[in-house]
Length: 388
Image (tube, rainbow, N blue to C red):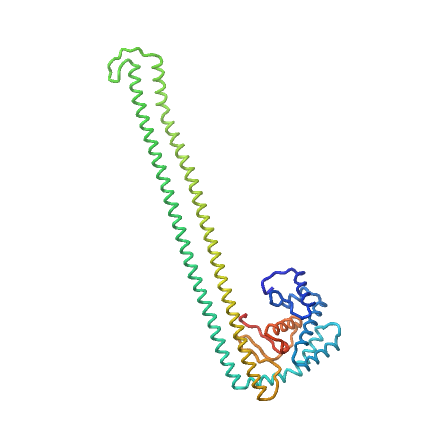
């Protein structure tokens, strides 16, 4: 739907039927915006469409100022189909009404529009419109620039935060690697000392088992089997020392590699968490930007309504002056100032091939434009390039 809601077929039918059954003859709508006629034609049967048309025509008859036109329409509708309003009968009635009344209304409008005060009013209104449109463009441009500046600041701040975290991670990893190198160097130093101590002890034990001191002098003591067993044990320890030292270094390196892996995983989780925080920050900022743009659109809509209301009052004053000066009554509303090239509002009603959709749209146009003083059939809105 134009308001953004999504309704299933049955829900849309229920909304349209509730408007059809209403005594006020309101146009089927959602959130104050009318449901397009194409959707109505898609979900409603032909009989239900005729019933809705009849309801809208009855409301047109009750709200029209022109009593003669209303009487002529009722007579035409009742004579052709007393129970429901068909598309053919409505088209014939509208055609007869255009032929009899439209030229007279157009002449009245032309006389009013030829007045000097009306031309000056239209010129002033056009200048106000141009200033208003320029103000809108300027406000939106300034808002876009402001949002772009805030985005750049946010991204620069996020990049700086990410760089600082990366520096912390690099420093922590370098410190861990330095500690690992130092630990391995200390272990190798301990191994070298152990190897030296073992060699010294083995030298003395071999000399003792040979019956001499390390200086070469005889000690004259009895060498027992236990002494020789201790000598063999030290020799085996010396022979296996290289393998033991290499295994200890491999164990140290494996433990260091495991710690580095866990540290890298922890740092990666920290980076991912920081990125999630940045994405949430970006979402919050964009949501704030959307709210600011929405508030600007609401402000523009309020100012537009106020400006058009003032223009309508000014046009009504011109019409009253015309009626006072000429003594004639004008039963049509003056055309509005075009908001942009491509928007047309004239006091004529062309024939349309799609009767239901066009009647539905023109009926809502009258309700949207204000009080139902004149039948909406006399005012046809063209397709504007800018949507208000």
